[in-house]
Amino acid sequence: MPENPKEIVFVTERVTCSLANMYSIPKSIKERTLSQFEVTCGLIHVCEALIFMHDTAKMVHLDLSPENIWITPDGSWKLAGFGFSLSPDVGSTRYLLDCGTPATRYAAIPDMNYSAPELSTQPGNFSTASDEWSLGCLIWELFSLGVEADGTTQKLVKVDDGNPLTHAYQVQNLQPIAMDRVPEMLHSCLTALLSLDPSRRPSAARVKDCPYFSRGPVQTMRQLENLLQMDEAHQKDVLKNLQASLVHFPTHLLVSMVIPKLAEVSNITDFASDLLPCLLFIGNKVDSTVFNTKIVPAMIPMITLSSPPELVTQCYSILLKQLDMILEKGDNTFKNKYFLPILGRCLNSGYKQLQLPVLQGLV
Image 1: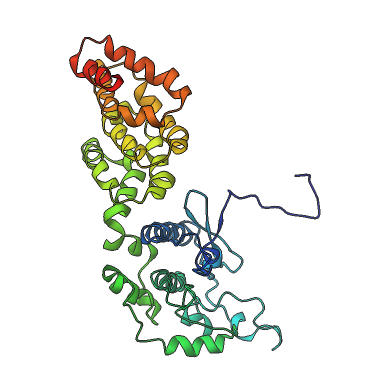
Image 2: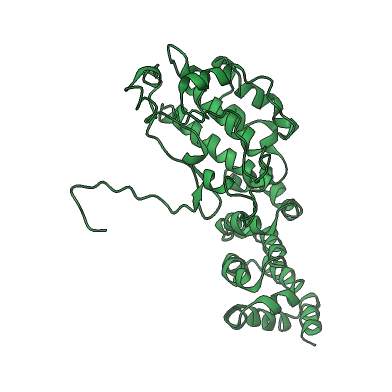
């Protein structure tokens, strides 16, 4: 891009769409909806972004909404839209109530559908807890997907005219809030987030540590992300149970979220005997294109090991259990460069446990 002294250009990582784009598409033309697992992982990403903003950057976002959450190709959720962000030291957002002329007063304010009650009432004081209210609105909406006739999402607070006075009235009369579509393990946390009293709202760190975000596939992903920070005993326990945990993942998430995490640690020799079965498990679920472009590169560090001999034999035995699938899905480059030489070494190894599967598979 040529330099231009009249323009400032911000370059970010590639994003696919905003969260608003994703869940405002009518069901009749939507290719697929966000799964509950994707929503849960995305909310963890949002919590982590707020933790950084509040604890490290010492800023309050003040405009947390679906339009300001961007989704990357790998499914990560990124916080954006910092135009209204302020330091907590500022303390007040009175401009929401008395700025501009009556005709333009609401042209430059945050999305009032997600704004905390204290932003639309005098004296307009705000704190990090204001973002927690917005997070609560977001959580409620994401777990209430599909309540409208066209499959789009109903808003918890709906301020069509953008008027802070309308907002103030609605949030003061919001209770009781229907929780029938929200997972039960989130009820108490969400109720606290949507408290009119800012002091009762939990921090993003406490929300992230809610039991709902520490179970099932979500727990598996968090364990993979933190694997290198664990002690050796904990690592072995996670890896030993990893394949059984992957059964609960839909295939597209195995490809977009799990394989990259496994690839990041595939060059660690001690992990090979546990990671290789997981990659082959996923290999059975994907087509040949994904197998050769995603699975094979992740396997190469493990299938090219030359020592220790016991681990090499163990990896070869794991591969031979999936001999038919590998021969079916592997392309010629992979077979000629990697797999056929492995079969030759198995035949010449002198070990029946390696020789017999090859002979039986090639008959």
